[in-house]
Amino acid sequence: MTEPALLEVAWTDPITGCRGYLVIDRLVRGVASGGLRMRRGCTLFEVRGLARGMTLKEGLNYDPDGRYIPLGGAKGGIDFDPYDERARDVVARYLHAMRPLIERYWTMGEDLGLRQDVIDGVIAEIGLLSSVQAVYPLLEDRDAATERLADAFRIEVGGLGLDELVGGLGVAQATLTGLEMLGLTGPNRVVVQGFGSMGGATARFLAEAGLQVVGVSDVRGVVVNPDGLDVENLLRHRDRFGGIDRDNLKPGDELLPPEAWLDVPAEVLVPAAISYCVDSDNQAEIGAKLIVEAANMPVTSDAEELLAARGIRVLPDFVANSATNSWWWWTLFGDVNADADEAFGKVRTRMCDLVTAMFERATLDGLSLRAAALQLSERNLDAIQARFG
Image 1: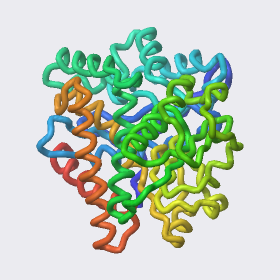
Image 2: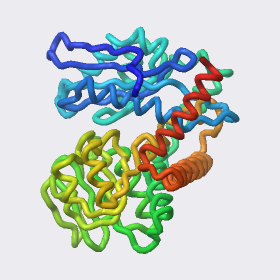
Image 3: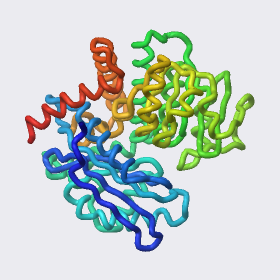
């Protein structure tokens, strides 16, 4: 049975009346890590699950020989439309209300519906040092660490920031290793649902690895091309929310309605946008052999059981999308420098090792991939508890 969260906070915006939440699932050495999301319909139940997922990510990536010391898990969420012109003001009021927790306990960054530059701007306005300042007391040399992280955030590769690329590379490497473990070494087609920070970078690295990205969706619909989409062209023509400019598509690209992302023939499906988008009803439309959860909690538990019965494997979110979180801390604590090649190498090696260990445990014990990953994470969480209390 999952232990109850350490702290749950519910907030009501005095201007719009919208609701916001913060859940701290666990503290390690007094600190928890997890992003802030904004979407219409966000609930406390959702944020609670996301916070638990962050605890599992931290545990899974524990290396007793590393400088990066895992933190606890937390998550924030605001039930508001990020496209609304009032969204930034809502974020500002939410962060101001959560200020005491951000100062001492909660390290946070961007998540669905929010960009890091928006969070950083608001954090500066309300007089805080950083969105991750709660971790500062754990650093040996704070000035060197924060300068290293700032330098890393200034790095761009092919027009995308390193902070965006590491998450997508992690998902892509998890996908490639998963396909290898399943023996699916032939030509593989991919559909990516969501083309924001995670989805866009994932699509780039999968295309670079030789997979055919045949479908990409945003809030307006699905762009498909059975011969493979020009991912770089789509990246050049998207807005800050991952919306694709329909006026700059290539010949052969076709448009389908939003719900058609499950219908596009492909071996791999990468949900990289919202939670609970694959449920017990629409899972029957999926013909892919592998689903890689780039988003947090995109596949419901009921749907996952039905997919398993049809032989479709689900590579869980707290494995596949953990690289962004780990890269922040690897950089801040000094396990990697502000260098793209070094960061990419660390992400590829770590994700390959994690996914391989998960598949091997699942095969050995007759478990689902999620159950195997849970065992690996919980083993590490026990070690963290023994070491730090």
